[in-house]
Image (cartoon, rainbow, N blue to C red; front, top):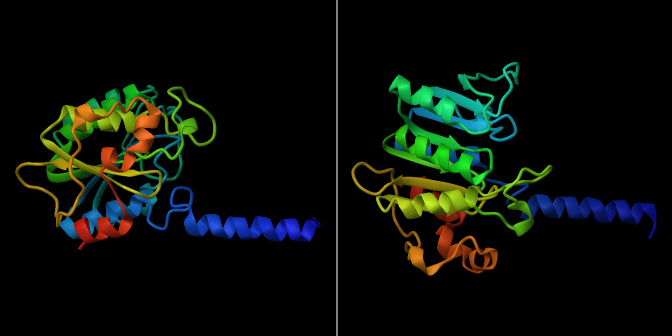
Length: 247
């Protein structure tokens, strides 16, 4: 194979990847989901909970949609700076210190976006505090809920793409809270949505997959999860998200 032919094939593969890989090259990103929820519901207050190696979309969350935007980073050295506003930070491996501080202010937020350190423990802590910080009718938006392959789900940090056990923490969290509704949008590594089932709720026209029986699946068994991920995650397409949540 000539060098020019090899280059052309690589270029074609790159173009196809950008067209069809909804994880690495999402046409609709986690920030797009957040902005769409904000516009549809008249939300104003946004909190991003992430680490120095996750998140990376704070600048893409619209100021016009969310006039109040705050960011909390943990696993973050004291001298960290990336030219964006940083309201709360902690060097700890989980977000409890940061999140306790925010809870202590009495604030609530219409969207709490969680892109955690991807251990099970850190993810569960972020989810628990995120729910406490959620305003009436608000939505938790959780990144990395739909790992496409088992190699990304190591419980320990690994260089490169790493989704860890955030998807397990997400599923256990909604299983433990029968008063919550949830689904996962099939884009950008899986964008989970959690909202309260009673009282004021975000705009949703329905049509979501039925909630599965929690006792039916052993989600810690990768094969069981992989074989039934659409039912377990209540997976919806971007188009279905737009029809159900963003009109």
